[in-house]
Image 1 (cartoon, rainbow, N blue to C red):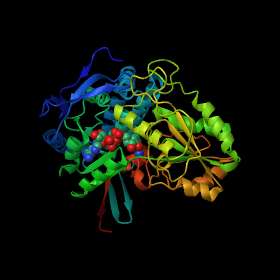
Image 2 (image 1 turned 180 degrees about the vertical axis):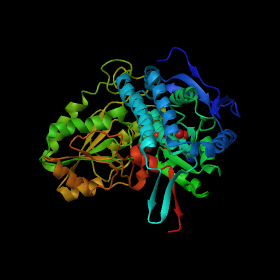
Image 3 (image 1 turned 90 degrees about the vertical axis):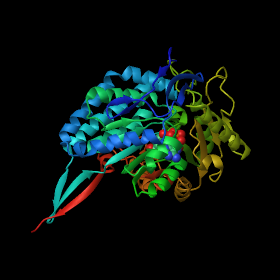
Image 4 (image 1 turned 45 degrees about the horizontal axis):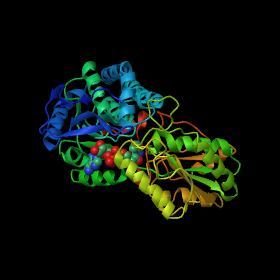
Length: 478
Ligand code: NAD
């Protein structure tokens, strides 16, 4: 997709572009071709240490900078990203494989809005208040390591970095090794915005190497992590040794429950969009469709018909709704799950493990729908992270709630019903962080996060700001 490779060979530490401690590098692969489009350093513990020291040195000054001054910097970052939005959309389409139009709206539009919203929140937040004879201050947690995944790379970075900077924390960002190029654009934008040295630092490399060095580092006060539940488990354990605050946004296996009085075609259409967005690589994707037994045949027919409308292909081509998966590892993983679903006896209604016709190169997979899926089977329990929908049936509302809540995850979900009131009544019974009511859309100001093994803490809006703040109470003489 890119004519020339984008090579980054230095880290952004204390507002300088500095050489890594090792010559090791990581290739960034375009998933639509399998070709390398860029290269970044594979840093290690000494690089983590240099970045943390810079962030530590900047902390006292940044955390005591007036919030409205911090807000001015955040506005400048939003502005700088906006100026480079076309370049970012192409870059992220190249790194992640998301169709360019969607990438531009979601992968670039959303991070800009998030930085702008944290500028606003920094200005509007109540930074201290009184409770009886105490004065309560809200203060920055300290140095934060932000460790992010590849699926919505800049959005996830913005949700962490925007909130942390607004709160007065200083940051070391370690983006995903699969899609790190956009983070260098952010570092360039931050450099141009003139943030004081050390307030934002960027290092790259593999999770178990430089990522874990950050988590282990005694001068890091908090880890804000988005990624897989397995990595989250490991990070929790390692961070526990130094009693760090840890915010975790992890995997999901979200259910869309369709009640018998719902608008079935709208529910199926909405569920397919929520399941197949970003080729199914969305943590809160609605990957299980729960329908009453009596509606199964019609639901299955509509789902197969709807899946056919998801044209798979080159993310740069107009009309393409499903790009490739982000990596060869993802492709192998998703194909293995599809084979497993067939072996475990689910009905393969459309799609399958073979590459879509004519797309044998690159990491493409067919939009796939399974019917009559057993709630306890692997494809109904584990996060697949590909365009694979499982249709399950339920007997009554209690059964639907039991099935929906019957995985270790609790991230997203949906309820489709004849009225919002009925849908909301059912949504109250779901052990999950967010539920879309009759097709309600994502809200960047509402809290986002998971119950159970989908993580802890919340991102976005004022809830996201809270994650990066400590409370200090001053008891004054009455
Ligand atoms: P991943 O866990 O493999 O990697 C995420 C990040 O963690 C990367 O930067 C990686 O280098 C780093 N990392 C891995 N092991 C580490 C360790 N031991 N110590 C420190 N850092 C480590 O996840 P991924 O494949 O990049 O992303 C996909 C996963 O992310 C899916 O499970 C998805 O559901 C989840 N996700 C969750 C949310 C959410 O908000 N809940 C959002 C997006 C993605």
